[in-house]
Length: 110
Image (tube, rainbow, N blue to C red; front, side, top):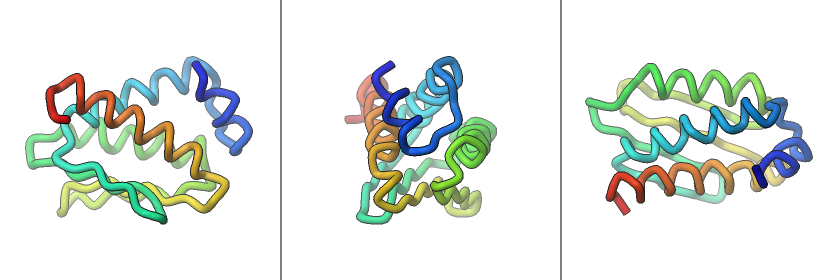
């Protein structure tokens, strides 16, 4: 997995299996997303009311544990996951966005 050296260099604590599992979570989330927005300070992923909230919470919890340099917030009321990063985390956000977009494309959303 090409993202492992990049993630490790940024300070991510996941091993190859953990990174693969997290990538899979993001692909599944991408398939459920109604919107994926990348701004200068991070990613905002929106979901409809039918989204798997357990999966959203699990992805957020793993991200908080492995990448303490990211700011991860789940807004259940707005059905949104926000992931913020400074310059050090930009390459990690790039990988997360690729996984989300891959899942969205596979689901026919874009």
